[in-house]
Length: 497
Image (tube, rainbow, N blue to C red; front, top):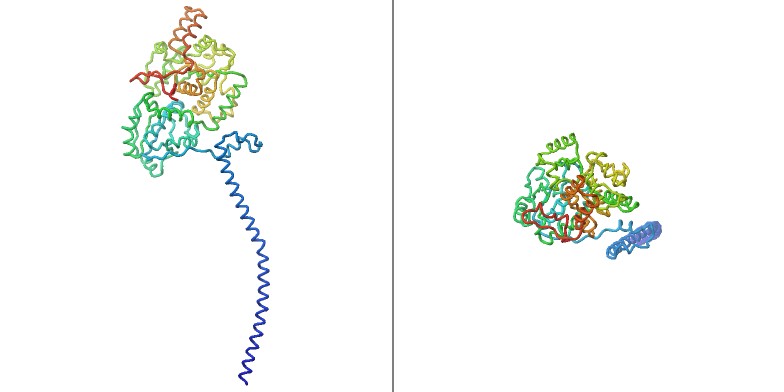
């Protein structure tokens, strides 16, 4: 009996504990419910965040699709959009479509150091891109000349839009801003093959002589680039690529482009304008040995300067003989007579695309009298606008280049690199009027006129007749075998393009 009672008591205690357990469970359930209710708000915030993230992804997807559509249909798609999302803002916001990369087995790396002024370097860059493409090598962004007479410290990216240069040519050749690190260390240690390529060489020279060196050394540095590719006899694809680089890939920086547009706009507000590339600066006269119209002190100064620069090989020069052969730039006085003889309207704006004219106001007096509307970038723009261009001759030349392209008439007084490259570019833009002066004939006519052998009408008629077919009209280049310096320069008349 005692055992039975004991068992019964144990069962009773279990029932009581179970009852308490049920209460505890009920209490626990209520706490869980409270906890769940507390978690409802955070969970709703998470859902809201997920919805927002999903919406953003969808919006970006739509934007990418819109970008593709905009590139396909062109800027006209954005006509009529509100000003807050204008065509300009849309264009800057959208990612530009890029040509597909050309895939090829890289034979090595080509480094180049350009020499000369802006337009000599510009033509050289075009040549080097074509050579790199033909050799299937990687081109490193060219280094610009900083040791020439002008001592311009500008880097490539200070003058040209380097990103556009690289991306616009990616379907032709791979271009890098600098060598890969492992190869860069070799260059720093001087473990690089440097050479000046032979002037006026066919592309076959680079295939046979330079490419084996690139394969051997991995990196080859060309330390001279002026006129290193022949004008004629090159594959058609090479000639077309030279043009593409010159007319499309080599864009100036946005800062230079905008300032150039402003100068053109200011000129256009007053009507037609002519650009006169008056190459009568001190460096040109010292280099060429031309001193027509200079006084004794100026002649001595120019001679001293010629001896300062060892790479100017010609030291003793007969100025008068050179002038009679048409190898001197026209003086400001000769230029004034020529323009008048050609019946260039005296009221036209004449933009002087040049540096400081040697002899200053004294030498410019006759030209200013004949054409009183003489202007320069320095007179059209505020000093603050040109502040960043001071002591950067190539950047100043870039401004003159842009204005020269857009002028109604372009007249160079010497056939230097700017004259030739601008002439070719204006041909490409639709054979815009470019008066190519026959200096040899002109100085003879001018001397006869000054000696009283011609009346003004006779002089004017002779000048006009001599230049009837020298206005930048369509023509083929003059080819002189084995005399590349005497034949027409490729960039002055790239008729293949």
